[in-house]
Image (cartoon, rainbow, N blue to C red; front, side, top):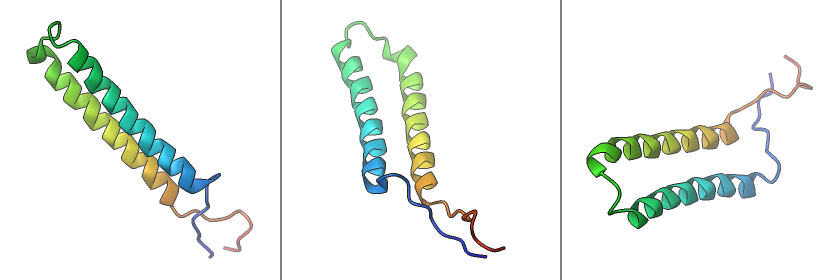
Length: 78
């Protein structure tokens, strides 16, 4: 059975964009918190921010793994 990694459309660019979008999201979250320091009660928000950051990292990891998962082409003989 032939197993290969099937390249996505412009795979290198797509991977870069996924990573960049994740980074931009995290930067925007932290900039928003910074811009609202006087209004934010960090004793109530910190755990949520940590959860969001962890989820963003987890989703980024899953997205990157999807680029490298081996697939079996439909045309290969089993």
